[in-house]
Image (cartoon, rainbow over all chains, first blue to last red; front, side, top):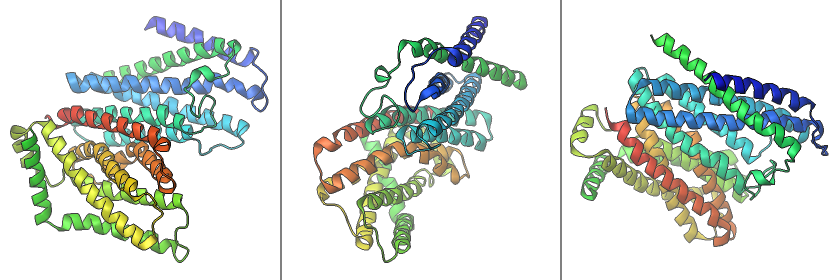
Amino acid sequence: MKWIKIICIFLLAYVTIAGFLFDVPALPILNEAIRILFFHVPMWFTMIFLLFISAINSYYYISKGRINYDIKSNEYANVGVFFGILGIISGMLWAKFTWGTYWTNDPKLNGSALGLLIYFSYFVLRGSVKDELNKAKISSVYNIFAFAMLIPLIFILPRMTDSLHPGNGGNPGFNVYDMNSQLRIVFYPAVIGFILLGIWITNIRVKIKFLNKQ
Amino acid sequence: MLKKIFIIVSKDLKIDLSQGHLFFSVALYLVSSIFVVYLSFGSVGINDLSTWVSLFWVLILFGSITSISKSFLHESKKRDYYYYFLVSPTELIFSKLLYNFFYLIILCFVAFGFYSLLIGSFIESHLFFYFILIVGSLSISNCLTLVSAISYQVRNNSTIMSVLSFPIILPILLILIKITKISASNFSWNLVQDDIYLLILLNIITLSLSKILFGYLWRN
């Protein structure tokens, strides 16, 4: 855990400095707004990663029945949704400057908004059950089911229709990103750094929950 | 296993037949919402295909959520234990799935008949549309039966079913709307191929997850 923190601080410091100061390709329309790539896209990577861990923890809970797994899964979902909201906000700002509007009828935007709705209803479900063991069981089942339905919503459906996002409209994700090496040397560290940050935040929250229970 | 599934399905059917108001209340719910749509569009009517298709599937969505949320509702608390000793969770969930599937097929055709009677029909390739109705009721019942089991576990809460099911059913609903739009005007297999495959994939996912997860949900 100690190393995760050190690497995370190092990477994010590098990303913050390099993301704002390094040379970026000068493209029409995008201009300097391209720098938000280093902060917007990693948010979604982090969200998916954290929600995946949350679903795995839910599976551990229903198969092994230890309440700790349920607490972990809940906290991973919390932090994952938080990163998702950050991703939507940063994406809206970016869209305002490049597409001219905060929200368009783009399949990726709608998919991610729906994904957040799924997890909001997961929180509603958790809130509506009183008994702790029952709550853990029911919400774990829903969490796994919800994650399975999130995958087509975010990864498959947007690829079957045209999208304003780069790399969509029949093309599978990343290779077609016109990312040159200048962007890559900041983008990949940013992804890793934000994922580590997400794990770190979740760890603190889980510790607080454990202490509260005792 | 098949025999037990058949027994539970026929038991559900007998309950529904003896309490006829259960089916008719859902049918009436659908019919009156169709009538609301008909009245609200007024003398202008629905003139384009995409509005027709979207409204139709949204109405089906509301009707199916109302009907499927009842699927575990008339199981009393004591009968839980009874089932627990008699049938495995897999048999129980598959019988509910099957029952909801047939229920939804009837509901879809009733809705389509009344909808096209009042608002008119834009469908040209009828055979394929009926196929979509059947596939659609299969996918909706696959997806919503587990959710109804979840909401049954959360007792005395009627809103939880719709809150849980709306975001989850949406991928399926979007694909169904898309296929219907394509097939209604000029149907060709090449245009809908990818979406049909995706729908089959989603059905496999929901079906297998229902089987696996219901076992954990049912166990106390």
